[in-house]
Length: 134
Image 1 (cartoon, rainbow, N blue to C red):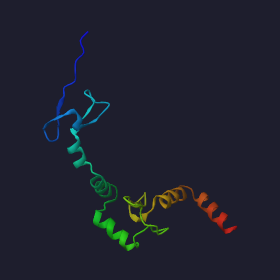
Image 2 (image 1 turned 135 degrees about the vertical axis):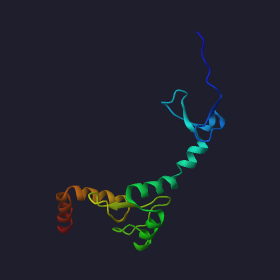
Image 3 (image 1 turned 60 degrees about the vertical axis):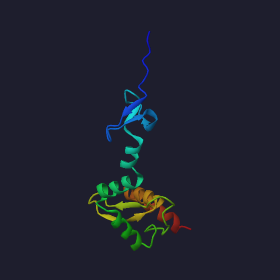
């Protein structure tokens, strides 16, 4: 029985350069166990900033400049609790799920609570009753 050794190099389908196997991320489903793009091309295309910018544009129709203007207008923090975003993170974009209209930027906690309250008015009213009873 002969065992076939995997090639020591691979050609990146993005930049078309031949590189050593360690220059590619692992990809479980790929025949050779490696991603088709090298790490350099992948990281360049899918940097956090680029992904964030693409998500803002695709999901909400906002540019990074639009996001920054909303954040400044809100005083630099969550519209509800006024807390600034944690280091290295952005606030969530709250929007009307029916119309798609952006309402405000919210911290993760306020965004989650608002989602629960929107989905179930009774829960919101129970929260209010609880606090009014103190």
